[in-house]
Each structure stands twice: as structure tokens, then as C-alpha cells.
Length: 221
Length: 272
Image 1: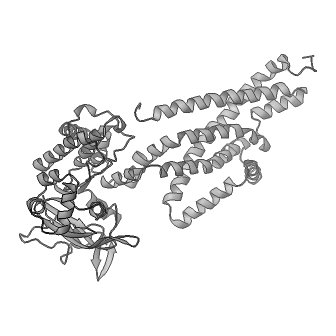
Image 2 (image 1 turned 30 degrees about the horizontal axis):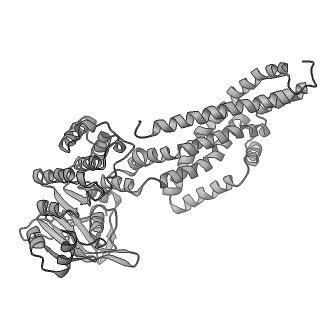
Image 3 (image 1 turned 180 degrees about the horizontal axis):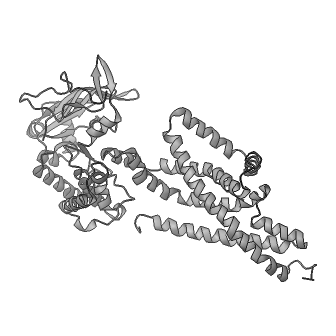
């Protein structure tokens, strides 16, 4: 590791890569997956709550939702970090990023639910189906299908927002790259590699999302 | 106020032979904004009757079916099914709304086939058919499947059980929709322009199935259609509507062969 003047050093690259991959799989990916699950479920709850809950309740949901959407994720992370200072930062960060994206996913679900044709609702009435069955057997499956591409986009967005967790001391992949740079005075390899890992992972997830979408098409199911 | 008393004043009004009508409209008014679709509408349908509603579009025929199916709510007046109020009943001169639970019990007696089929695209054909028998009537899945398959046989699609609605032609979809409605064994079947969205060459197959249903069951039918030959074949009563009022009513023979009203004659000469 002596050629410190060159732009790129393979030695540094190969030295940092295992650490980056480790953090990628143990932090970045875990936060994204659990955060997405929180966002997908909570987003659906928010969408249904705004639609079906009594007026004051749904208005409150809307207010909180707008508040979250109109402030930066970093501010929310820092706020939660100082308020809930007993919660491990990794857990807190995952929950906050999940809640943050839930507010976006709620809008996607709303659009998806609105896109279900009125005739579908009428058919459930004509068959005396219960509201619960109407939602779970007819409306949500159809809404999900049309919302899947947009939901997948938000998952990829969330994935790319996970480095913000470093502001509350979570060492995820990008922070790991930065730490390596600081220790060895070599930032370029670590940061470029971190970026490349993101690029490859995002690309693979978008391929996966497209396949899932195809699978959900009614004719091929 | 869960189960209101059988309203002896209007609801359970007996016909000449003491029978309780399957459907009774009592001074029903329906408005959409300022537009009055149905004016003070009174009519009764006997059990087992096949009544066709005819008239120019916008005359309120489909609205009547939608009121019976509780897809719309009347602004005034009362609808009774088997002598029981459907969604509202009169008490001390006030119009009192019934609980959702009561409405749902009433709905179970009624089936509807729509112009646009409205099959659930996320389910297979057989899943569409057994959905309500299993989850609404509480039938076992096994029994529902047996009956569902028999119905598919009846509508001539025994091999389409596992197809998805999007893989079927319009005529096939409508036949599945008929099977789905019949699977609930309704007392009243509402047919809302069931052939209007179909290609002309498949209209016949759908109507033939409905002719069979009319012949083989005693289900009460309320039919809105532009197929006058079908109306003639299936119905025993025809109501001619115009601008939300009944202009003329009678047997198909009377209405089609010998209409009394000018508006009926004008309408028939336009469609026949």
C-alpha cells in the first residue's frame, strides 16, 4: 500500500471490500428489509385508517403523515435519537426509516385502492361480502398489484437512504467506508466500492421487482 | 332497534290472494342532485314473477335494480323485500335507517348480474363462484366446490374452473357471473343489461342460459334489457318506464302487441 499518489489502489480496494460487504449484509440490507416490512404494513394501515376511521381520527392520521413527509429524514432520526436515547440506534433507525417511508407508501396504497373499479365494490355488495372479506379478498389484492412498481421504487429509495443512519451513530456500509478512509487516508476506493455495491444491489432489486410484477399478472398466475 | 316489526301498514301488504310480494316499492323517490330519477314510485313484484323493465335510457330502470341491491339509497319512500323493509322503515312518520347487519341479511336473498360482469380478476373462475357461499353463507369449501362445478356445467364452462376471468371472452365471463350469482341461491335475481357489453354473436348463449334458469327455478327476476325477444320469452310482466315513472304495464303480449300509450309505441318502434 505504498503507491499513495495514484487515484486508485487495488490493495486498498481489496482491503476494504470484505468490511464493506459485511456491513452491507449485516446492517444496510437488514435495515432495508425490516424497514420495508414496517413501511409496507404501516403504510397500508395508514391508508385504510384514513379511509375508514372516524373523521377526527383520520384527520389526525393525515396531519401526522404530512408532518413526517414535510420534514427531512435526518431531522426525524436525530429527534428520535435524542428523545428515545435508551433504544439501540440500529433499532431506532430502522423503525424511523420504516415510519418515514410508510407515509409515502400510504399514498401509493391510496392511489391503488382508488384505482380498483367501482364495479368490484358493487360485486362485493351484491354478494353480501363482509367489509373484512371485501378488503382482504378483493380490494387489497387488486390494489397491491397496481401499486407494486411504486412500492418497489420506494424500497430502493429507502435502501439508498440507509446511510443517513450514520447521523445517529449506526455504522452501516458508507460509514464503514468513511472510517476506512479516515484510518488509512484513502477514501476513493472505499467510497467508490460502496457506491458500486449500491448500484449492483439496486439494479438487482429492480430486476426482481419486475419479475414479481409479471408473476402477479392475472393471466400468468 | 335491530329487527323492526313487520310493517303491517305498507311492508307486508298482502296481495289479493294473501301472498306477500317479493319486492314492493312504496312511494320511492331517487334524486341525483337536482335531477329526480324516480318519482313517487309504487310497484310490487310477486314471488316467482319475471318482470322486465323497459324504456328509454335514463328512465330510471337500472336505478331500480341498484336500489334493490342497496347499491343506491332512496331519498324518500321504502323498499320491502318479502314484506321486510330493505334499508329504511317508517316509524312515527319518520324514515328510520336500518342497521348494516339487517341490510346484509336482506342482501343475501338478492343476486345481481351486471352489465360489465364485475368478476374478481384476482381470483380464478371457481374461486369467484365459491367466494360468497363459503365466506358469506358459511358453506364448507367441499360443498361449495361441488355446487360451483355443477353451476359451471350448467352455464357450459365445465373446463374453465381454473381459468382467470381475463382469459375468458365477454360472453364466458358473463356466464361465470351468472353462475356466481346463482351460487348464492337468491330468491330474487337482478339482471342489469347483462348482454349490452357483449359481442352480438355471444348474446344468444347468455340469454339461453337465463331462459334455462327461468324455466328450471322459481327465482323472482327483475330484468333490465334491450333484448325485446328475450323479455317476451322470459317475463310474465313488463313495465314501461319514462322519466322515472311507470307509463304502462301489462303482460308481454299486451305491451309488445298492443301498447296503449303513445310513449310505449314510440319506444318500441325505436328498438324493435
